View: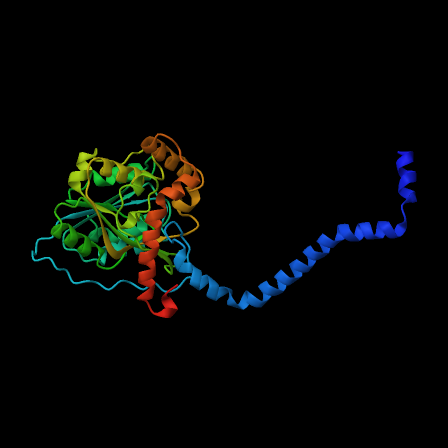
Amino acid sequence: MEIELQEYKKIPKKWLAKFFAIINKPYQLLGTSRIILHIAFSAFRPLRPIFRHVAAPFKPRLGNLNQYAPRPMVLPRVIPNTQSSTIFPKISLITPSFKQGNFIENTITSVLNQEYPNLEYFIQDGGSQDETISVLKKFEAKLTGWVSEKDTGQSQAINRGFARTTGEIMAWLNSDDLLLPGALSTVADYFARHPDVDVVYGDRLLIDRNGMEIGRWIMPGHDNTVLSWADYIPQETLFWRRRIWDKTGAQVDESFRFAMDWDLLIRFRDAGANFSHIPRFLGAFRVHEHQKTSANINDIGQQEMSRIREKILGRVPDYKEIRNAVLPYLSRHMLRDLAFRMRQPLKRAH
């Protein structure tokens, strides 16, 4: 060590200066590059909203629950019913509920305002201690019925509710979501004109806790293959015939707390159900801090989705494999979403 130190002292200082200058040069260049990049980014900062607007059509919205700043919800135009017959099929709609007193009145109103002439609407509450019961009493004269009793969760509430119904067409609407105007007539008309179809669903609006619109899901059309990898079907827009319900066991699987609708869709598909997508906004999905979807997606939801994929595929695929499998479907969605935007006024085309 002492010999090395003596040798170091023999090196001329000017050579040391040159040596350290050579070492420091890359760092000086790196610092200069950072300054240039900072100036460039600062110059383009005012253009960022434009860049985001241009790039937006090339990003899928399916799976994204918060897409833009809240704005008043624009309800779809009600299309006059085209059924030649005055006989409307009975629709059995149930709402499973638990501690959603802040939202359930809006949910009920969205159903009753459909003014569908042959509706069987039952609400199955799980023993709520909030404002729910007073709301149910307020509307009970207009409901087919309601009950509030303890249950093991949403799946059991759905099964109990459907056990009290007899309609040809079935659906459930969660107690924080909405049906959009004309949804029931649209569904009934579609089933009447397509007797071979067993399951239908539509497009979705996303709303916040105040009922302001924050996004939309425009579906690309049905794809049975994608169902093995992911469930993009908006549950609040989903309707099916009782015949396929009875064929697949007449119940949702109560072991699921989150993905019971995906499991039901898989069972429908595997039983030979004929699916169809109605290119119209039929429902609104509410996004809020107490929502089951938001709270459970990272734990229970992921476990249940992995369980479904393993059952279908024989393994749990990684994120990359899932992404590659659904990419063609998402590409079709983006094209339809872009076409929708092009038909909208510029200020609402976000």
